[in-house]
Image 1 (spheres, helix red, strand yellow):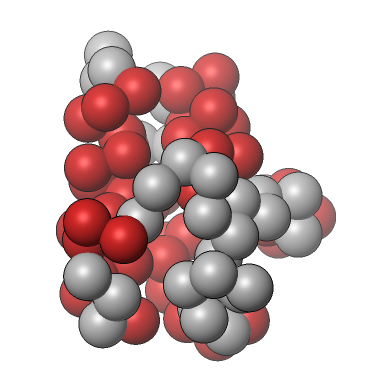
Image 2 (cartoon, helix red, strand yellow):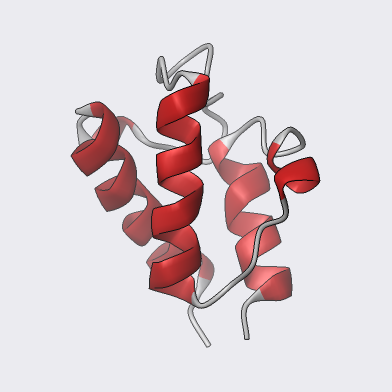
Amino acid sequence: MATKDEVLTGLAEIVNEIAGIPAEDVELDKSFTDDLDVDSLSMVEVVVAAEEKFDVKIPDDEVKNLKTVGDAVDYILKNAA
């Protein structure tokens, strides 16, 4: 099972690859849309990559609840296989 730091680091790498945001800017309290400029299309890519990386299923209706990086980290920690 991944730790909170490992999930955060993994998400930061994903956001960096997809949206070109420096990994060190991806912090728990940052909003994907407001702070990191991740648009809806990029967010879908982030979700798909996170599902693969962390072996977790994130239903479409849950994605809208993942407003901050912390929301996503908490979701992954609770739901990872």
